[in-house]
Length: 76
Image (cartoon, rainbow, N blue to C red):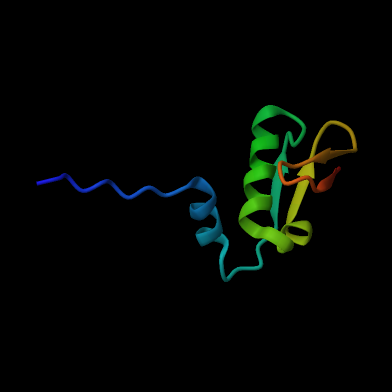
């Protein structure tokens, strides 16, 4: 008998499920660093078109960053 494969859940699916049905704004501090960049990528993938109005990035100086899907994001 073959063992059943364990269920695999992607982090982006967990984030999308946690934010589904809410209108919460998410702040990402350190948005130009490694962890902040990963957080922006994850949130933009999870929220899709809503991300532009629901995710705000903060860093030591204002600039633009590009998330993994190619969108340019303003960071305050």
